[in-house]
Length: 309
Image (tube, rainbow, N blue to C red; front, side, top):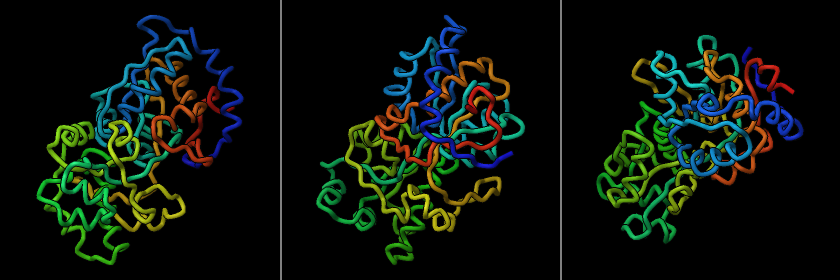
């Protein structure tokens, strides 16, 4: 049930117009609203790029809501939220939390990379802009200078900790993760992460590339050894782990965004139209700062007939 099946870009692009055409107009007014629960890192991606493009192309409207992926999947699994569509920044996490009870399939449609964004006018920002390796500059930074996301709430948080672990090996600095602790401060949400950088409360933040672009902040991508953007390094990423409060061990893996339409969706047709749009319009996704390699889209589980064409 959970095998991964690549679907060629040509297949999606060749059928998307006809498919969306059959669903556009099926729902009108308030009934056309599609409730989307999406990863917080996609807030500007959806609001500024995907949402207007989708609504212009169809008669559907989106009703997005944003949370850390761990949080949003928990809201669905415990019955607090009942969206039509879920989008997670960690494809494996979505399958683990939703498959069987809440969803039977998932489509992976984009990737990203991890790095650090910064304010150029700050002491840390000046060092980074001058070419000082980020990890050397970060170790020397003042306390609470670098904002990081909460690992208990979203994948960005635990990927940050994993990146610090892998960076220690990459730079032959065994104590690097501990040395970075004084300079970092954990924020409760991805939106707060960059809000505090923009207002000058912090000089930098560990973020995904699209988040830095959304906020017009300089971005230094981490090396492939720990940016979680190189699929060929999957085994290496897996050597870094994070253990949740309930004892679940999460292994590092390449960043992949995945989406599904929930089994109990109120607007199944609209949800599927939105998923088709994500798969069929990689240029819109790329414009928002995400990566769409030729290996995507892929899917896990048995896609509905309307999607498997």
